Structures are given as structure tokens and as C-alpha cells.
Length: 155
Image 1 (cartoon, rainbow, N blue to C red):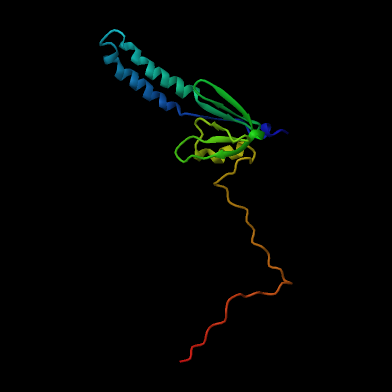
Image 2: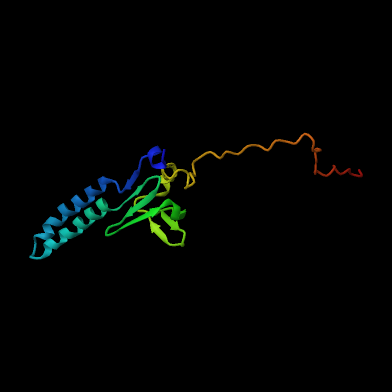
């Protein structure tokens, strides 16, 4: 069974309630847009925002990452990804083998556990419990106590 059969693809997108902002901006621009000829061009701003929200996304599956930006698309295989660059308040970026960056639209640091699952472990999950086992003491080794003996006072 291939890795893509184990875990379905995941699409990270900008939440669609962001479109409410575009609708609100269009409604608020209406009185100004119809005040003089040519000001109807103000409607291009909310329309551009709608295009940006609907277009920007990152699709990830077991074989590749597809980063779709406002005017382009970049397909990167997991074999080309060296690391994931985490920016605390921004979108993540994939660091490629040639040290170039591919921005991953709508993927944030909070999405790392899902990204780890979909990538088949190629990306480390920061929320996973570490599998640390206590080293077993060797019965044949002497107990080496490196603590110095207590000092005696002369009183």
C-alpha cells in the first residue's frame, strides 16, 4: 500500500469566513463608489481580496506539497524538502535541498501535527510524546559514586 493510500490529502486554506470582510468592505464602499464617476473601481479591492482568499492554499499528501499562491502554483516532492521553516506569526515555508524557500500558504505552526501525520513522519510533530527509555543499569558495572565525602569540621 502506498503512503498516499494510508493518509488522505489535506488542504490548508484561509478560512472562508474571511469572505465576510470582503462583503462588508463592498457594502461600505457603495456610498463612496457611486458618489462620482469612476469610483466604482473601489469594488476591485474587495474582489481582489476574495480572489486571494479563494486561491491561496496548500495541499499536502504523502508524496508531494502543492503550494498555490495568488498567481502561481508550485509542486514540490517530499524528497526535495530538507526542512520546514517555522515562523511563529506567519505561514510556514518548506526549505528545499538547494536551500530555497517555498512558502506554504495557510499553513501555520499549529498545523505541524497534521503536517507530520500526512507527510508520513518526514516533518517532526512537536506535540508528540518523546519515546525516551531510561537506560538500564548494567549489573556488571560497579556503582560509581562521584560525590566527594563530607568534610569534618574541627570544632
